[in-house]
Image 1 (cartoon, rainbow over the protein chains, first blue to last red):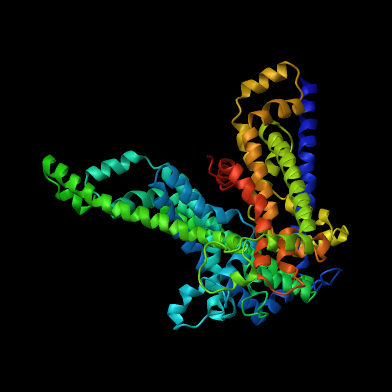
Image 2: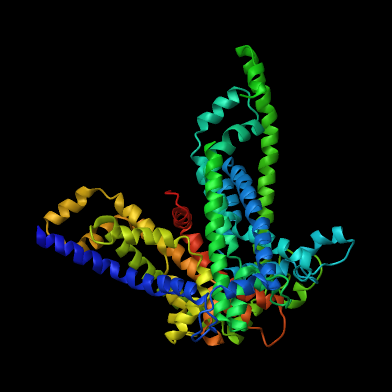
Length: 293
Length: 296
């Protein structure tokens, strides 16, 4: 018995070994290093001196940093709530369909989600292309016949990238909402229909409160995801060469790789890190509290 | 309850009203169905439009109007892209890195998930909490330090350097642990009496009983690795080591702008994930729900 107990422990560590090594090297170590680096004036590669909170002072007096923070939050606002609400609406619409119609519509909304961001970028720069894009046919009536270079017009940039992002990622939300809707018993709807409840009443009194836990989950996942926004904003702005569309991850990379300020980049990373942790915990607690009311 | 429900008085009134409401609702229902289908078509249209454009010659692509099918169907864009760009190499890089990430993550996560689920050892709870906590760490904020670390390994601009930071996969361990938890203890006890070792238990009982999970996890890991942009973009700066998501956006065709060719590279980049999705639809959706914490 003692022997088998020792075997169990040996086996456990042997099985855990790859995980411990990988996690230690590519997760724990770089994360700890980030917090250390943020308090130094080190370049990207090489050592630096301890400077305390100086990097954070530099960040808060850097206008570009605030542009990046503002753009990130603006993008979050434009993408998280619309993709959650539209996701719920589409899920409800799909859920009432049957058979092939249901699987076909679900596929139409879900397919973009599995694509790489580079493909999404190529497709939508073609759709919105100033000279030949088909989306211009939808834009022209609003501008009186003039074509618009959507990603080169500053006020349109973030809304357009958010729109593309919602198009790209909504399938995920739809999927989670459909799973949630299927968990609501159809008897509740039948009973309320006998009571004469209309569609809107049913939605407000049954669907919305019962789907709330899923809504909270989707909102939280989307919030965390979109605070990390980089890929789409970088790709769509690549030809524009302006700092006005910069987001936080982009700022970190710029400080680190272009300006060779490892310490400052790490400090900005810490800000992003804390922002994500605090906002997501806060949001989840708030949403949960609302659900329990 | 709503006012409508309170105003109902006799059973007959309920029946009559219910019937008229039903007929009324059917019309609205039909409208909603048609609207849903229309929106689905609009949603899928950019995908179709991107694809169909690649089969048109350039002069047709820039012609005004919406031409839903090419007049002259051509593979010229694909032929050009395949012969004149490094897309084959990028494909290979993507395949190697995504394949390696998938295999390592699945093996590592299954082993760790099994140990945490089934074995008693010092530090078990510590590791479990660490995995749960690592959920909170936004990986892009560690990117700069990943770069520093990889350059210390002299792995910048190399495939191992692209692979290593992608191996952080707490969700996969959590999924395995949950599924191994739900395997009845009887199986384990019977096998232990027969003298099976822990490795045999894992490979003969626990993994085979959860093949579906392994497939789902492997597929979603592969798609995620194939689609990843930020880290491969940071870790590589020579064309030869790029993977496809980076190569098709960072390398500009020496032959000038061509919508057809740009889109053809994009369609080729999407092909593997689209095929994997179409074959394993159910597994993909299952894996996505699992990773969101919904056991489907």
